[in-house]
Length: 135
Image (tube, rainbow, N blue to C red; front, side):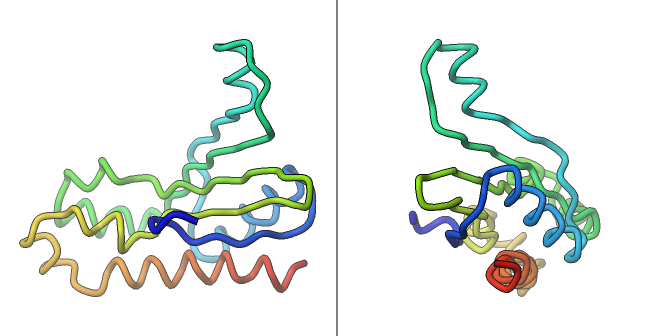
């Protein structure tokens, strides 16, 4: 896994794991705002076959409001992307790391939001870890 995300691999189908991660995120105050089906998009736009791959745009309104209240430009980093990739042996679930994403913020924003990226990361990591328990 690249250094800008957190990932686990679990057994199941893409649709089954999608329902599970959506519920796990919901317990942490996140909802899914967007869904991009890359398999369908690649077939439709390029005529190529691609494995089952979803990008979910997750948002916790409380976190988003706090961040946007400090720096409206942070909207460029929202929502939190959650990627589901179906492989032969299960589904990889990846979530972008808020600490890495916030590392691009200017010094003033970082100072004003000290501890915030870690709080969001903890919440997202909790949702990700709960998938292990559900397995």
